[in-house]
Picture 1 (cartoon, rainbow, N blue to C red):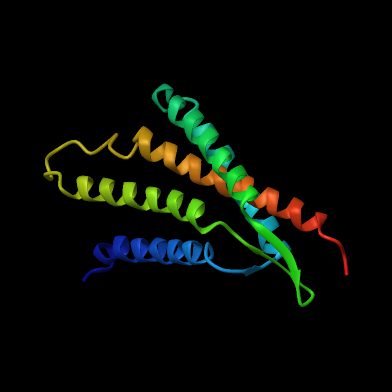
Picture 2: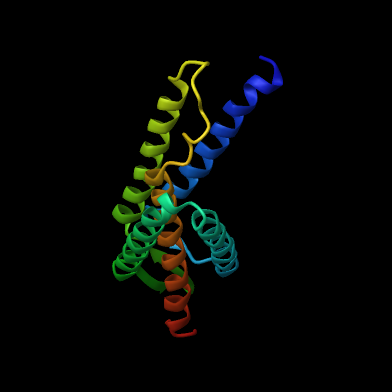
Length: 165
């Protein structure tokens, strides 16, 4: 395969690997890594600002921006309510609610797979511009970013509230 033909496959495999790692962290007790969590908050904050700036000029994306942000924030808050934090053997750790994080990540993966299938099924002569600006996909991405941002900020706050040993 020539390099340009294999590039989309490599990018897709890379994104799939990142999703696998992210979803895998939704299960079981996780060690708390403050630097990684703060880095995640910074990156997600930048991504949230970028999504906001990208969505504001497109009037048809406003409902997706609002609904996705509210739904993701609410799910992040709910996940925090069901997250267990504790110090075990002198190590701070947490057990996230696997259902909430897994469901929102799965929704985005299913939506992106459906869009990919629909996009690849088009004839070569059809217009493809505008297909990727789907309000549903945009809303799910906003919800996912809001979910992880709220849950990460809440995790930092809950870890700081634990007694020091």
